[in-house]
Amino acid sequence: MKNLLEEASWLPGPKIDKIAKTFMRVDCQLKEPPPFLYVHFNEVGRLLVDMISYVLGFKTSEHVDETVLVLLSSFSQGQPPAIKYNYAKFIAKKIHDQLIKLDREGVFKYSSYIYHLFMYYQSESFQCPIKKLDSKGERRSVVLWSSVFHQVQNSPYSYCEFIDQFVYPVSCLLMKAPPPRISYEMQKTLQLSKSYKIGDWYLYQDHTVIRIYGCELYPYRLPRYVPMRLFALEYYR
Image (spheres, helix red, strand yellow):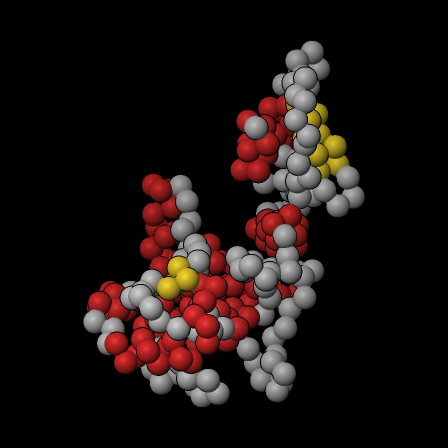
């Protein structure tokens, strides 16, 4: 990442012009210096930006900055990258660093790496369609196997489908027994005892509903398997 930032700091104008002509829409050519809007890129450009952003662990690709442009500049349509970065070493190092800091920080910042690792090694455990080969029969990068966890405008999956088709299967792989749709902590929050209940839960075939007694707000349809974060948002709403 240090090398990328150093290269990004002096990314020459001709390279930026080449990126614009190759990967940006004809009606959205350069008028200002980067960062550029994601929506201004053509289909191939958006695909590459999504891939690079996920490999780098970025949370969003709405704005494309110099760091992404450096990697994007190594691509030419129909040709292999002119510069090959050691993604495997970079990802392995970042995963190691984050796992070491997990107890202190309490969050894993590079979740996309974990997504792709599970998809690569346990692809048969997921219900979502997975395409390992491209139209020519050649093996694709694992980043392109499925769009179930891609945060892009044209993703065919909703957040609920992401939870049900990816997060829950991963939880089953990590635990000895499949977790319940509503965890014990959620049940205890809603119903501390038989005499003290503030709400209830309703398990439908394709979604879950949380109701708080006396609340007049219309409940959201939550995933079949409700994460604690979503439960907390619905509870406090």
